[in-house]
Length: 113
Length: 113
Image 1 (cartoon, each protein chain N blue to C red):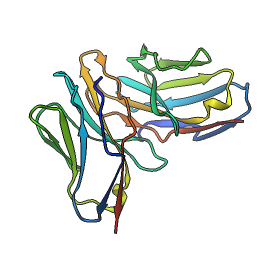
Image 2: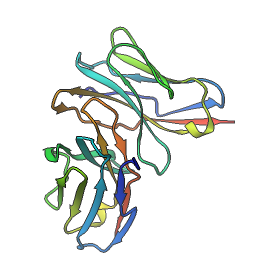
Image 3: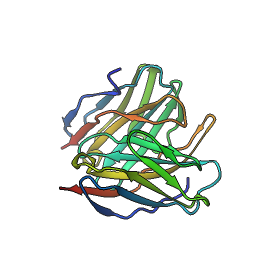
C-alpha cells in the first residue's frame, strides 16, 4: 500500500476562495482523521470518521470548514470561504482500529493570501 | 484525556541511548500511552504504545512505571535520523469511542555526531 495519500501537497489561494483538500486512506482502515498544524497551536484534531461516518467534529473551527467521506477510499476537507488565518499544514491520517497506530499522510501546505 | 508533560528539548550523542521522559499523573485505567514523532516537514509517525506493561518493537522500547503516572521512551542506539519532535499522548482507545490523539508541544530531540 502506498500509505495515506493527500493532494495537493501545496495550495496557494486568495482570501475568499474555496479550497478543497483530498485524502485517500490506507485500504481497509476504518478510521480517518483530519488534523491541522500551525506554529501557534501545534497539531489539532479537526474531525474523524469511523466507517465513513463523522464521529467527532468538535475540532472544526467554524462553519466555513466542512468534511465529507463519501466512501471508504476518499475524504475531502473543504474551506469556504478561505481566510489568511486558515494557512497551515493539513494532515490526514487513517487507522485500522481505534487502539492501533495512525498512519499520517505527507500533508497539504495551505497558504491563503 | 489525561494531560502529559514533556521536557521541551533534549540532546543525545549518536550511537547512545536516548531516554525521553513523559509525565501523565492523571492517567486513568483505560487510557493508553502513545508515542509519535515528527521529523521536519513530514507527517507524524507512530512509534509505540502501551497500557501498563513495558513494550518493545523494532523502533523503541516503552517503559511505564507501575503506578502508570510516567513513562520513558527509549531509542537504544540513536542516529542522526532520529532528530525529531517526540510526542507523548495519553488516550482512551476502547470500543467505538476512539480517544482523540491530542498532541502537545512534545520534546525536540537533537542527535548530534
